[in-house]
Length: 192
Image (cartoon, rainbow, N blue to C red; front, side, top):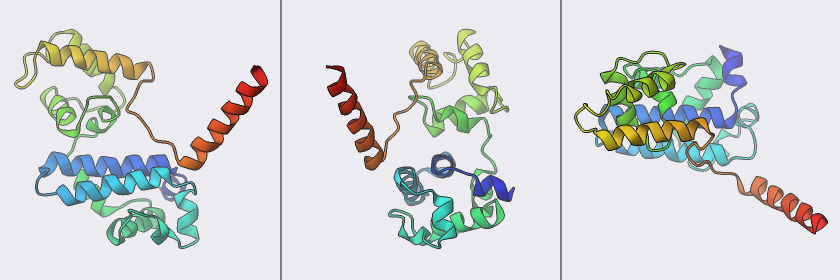
């Protein structure tokens, strides 16, 4: 398990923090409002950090990451030291694991994903996308309270777009974006 944490990329760690924020939102969005904001802010900051978190941890420089407060920093240190974070385990303990893959799909928020997973007793995070697509094609989502034909159609469209690689928009760190833009400009100049 230690290698798992030590081998995690910034994107994977940011995803983990977003999952914790989603779990808080499912539990009680009003009560955990500030935790949700803190975890999302930390995830954004980590995703945009040009140096790998595992390297910053080894150098003792996790405190240099903007948007990562003492509490989340301690959790990150626990993650790198032990491979697990008891606090994260507690927050996510009663949330079905099948909820989290759905959060990458456009238009899926934590509560919508949780409701669908719970209502249809979807357990497997590996197959949840296929399972949900089958359920929607069988016209079972439209009968749920708070959903309808349009919601069901939107879910099918969102799953289809996700399968084509049109996930939620991701950000790129400015140094990487600048370097990529420069390469594109050089290519265009050579091509014209």
